[in-house]
Length: 282
Image 1 (spheres, rainbow, N blue to C red):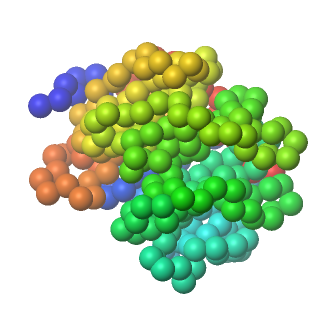
Image 2: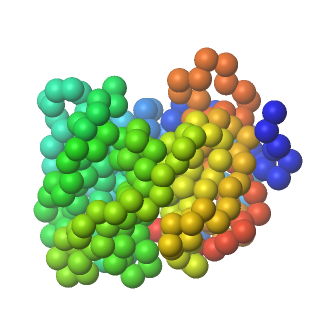
């Protein structure tokens, strides 16, 4: 039994695939439940269950704020969401074989949106990484990925971290500030047990990753040293967010034959670090 004394769970629903925690610059914290296509708002007090902001007819991998709306990695592509209106920028994975969906995504500090895709069956090498530039054009920038998660960026946008969860590795790429071109890939960290999932960079430049299958959070220094391991009382933590004075984690129930009451819960504890709010697509 994992120690859960330092964690508190939000009441209510246990999510099949909760993901995509983001703290916005207005203080709100959001998440997605990927397979049900829902974008949810966490209560400010963290003592009530999340409320639904919108629901799509298909998977919703992640969103980034965009003015009064959102940009989303959704279904087979990338879309702008305004209330119930969906405007597709591109659907590059539509009709592909094997069947594909978008997964995690985030805006970088320069206002671009980056999102990965994966096969429903996690077919090796079938996934890709896409970038949406400020003119709303969509480009494929990496191929050969299996389950891309993140990316996460340093505060200056000069470094991108990207996990390929199926291979237990977090990669690091230099990013050109003007063109957003990626430099040579290097291995930042490998995870021997479990898989690196959602990530965020804190105010000290350290990278936090939820470790799916190991029930842990990892904090890495900018040099790639594992500085801290935080146990999580759920087997499949999926994303991590430093929201003011709270550290918040989403978890998943999907694939578990005998889930506990905390599998699929949104969990929080006092934050041991701080981080900037999520960047906006602009």
